[in-house]
Amino acid sequence: MPRKKSTHVDDPAAVGRRLKDARLRSGLSQRQLAYSGCSPAYVSRVEAGDRIPSMGVLTELADRLGVSPSWLAVGEEAGSSNLLRDAEIALRLDEVEEAYALYSKVLEQAEDDPSRSAAFEGLAGIALRRGEPQRAIELAEEALAMTRNQPEERPSLAELMARSYASVGEVARAIAVLQRCVDYYASDPVQYVRFSVLLGSALTDGGNFAEAERVIGNALARGREIADPYTRARLYWSESRLLQEQGNHASAEQYARKTLDILRTTEDDYAIAHIQQMLAHINLDLGNPSEALELLREGWPRIAAVGTPLEVTQYQIEEARALAALGEYEQASALAMELTQKLGDAHPLDAGRAYLLLGETLVAVGDRVRALEVYELAIELLEQRPASRHTLTAYKKYSSLLKEEGKSDRALEVLERALALQDQVGRVLT
Image (tube, rainbow, N blue to C red):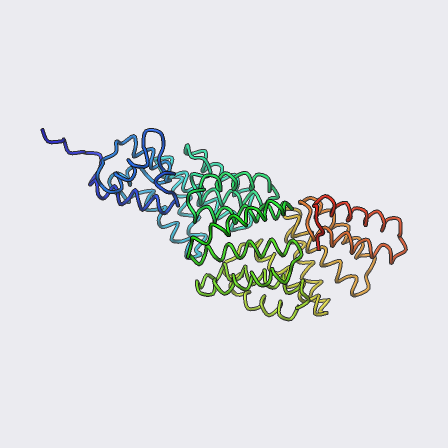
């Protein structure tokens, strides 16, 4: 007796194509998409058009992929699916307000949880881009709550959550999410390297250099399997950043140059601007302020066009450092003061760095009393984050100025804090 034609899908081959497209967009392998009752082999057969999944299986797969079950079944592009597509396109074109309006409309009109979850994820990305990481966390967690996914099952959302946690100083939570992703994607070289690089960066932020070295070393070993330029750039970038934090500026500069050379072939303005910022930072530490300022001015149109408010401010910190190193103290001081007001208390590391820079310019122009006050503010902010070379620099500069002002007891106390910090980290920070 012939099999009864299915009425809940339009065409098995078309269902297979849509499933594969959605899976690849989500960055998942067939094994990662599978679950109890739907094996990787079954996913493979569905994608090949050899099996027609039940509506229950389609719904579960749609949930895991963040798409509409009706879209998987019949390719329906009306309503929320269409709006989500338009919102994603708008965001890629940097039409942020249009994307925000479209994602908001999805929340008003969607009739299924995957569409609502995708809209929350889109809005979370916009919030982070606007410099509102706490709001991004709330929206990302809402996106996750709408489905039965774990963060590692939705790689784009996992990365967004980790970046948001790190932006508000919750480095431990960022590390936890990223470690789960590294473990989950152990058999997928591209995703493994992607999340290892992010984990290495978070560990570096947390001052855990030994573990960061291990994670990045493993990623470099796996990266030899991959020809993708972005993957190679990510690896070199993470190695450069770790070396920079360890005070090995010359080696850091070499890896940063390799990263920039690769990224120039991609014409990715956002990534190029960030690596130019890193190279400028390294050149300042190497005593090359003119080259640093040249790099920053070349990259400014890029970061101004596509960077978040926080990223633009971080970029300007390097500009102020370069100006100060070139003796342009008035200009550097005015810019540093402007940046401290923009950053407030929401971003203690960057605000602390801006106050540290302001203190240095005040010493240079002879306003030592005010410089002492500003150094105190810098230390207060920097101590809110894990140990870093910026904190150590603040201690040393503050201690030196206190000693010059005849406050030897206080200077000795601050210097002892600097030595304790180095003992805590377990290596010399320079």
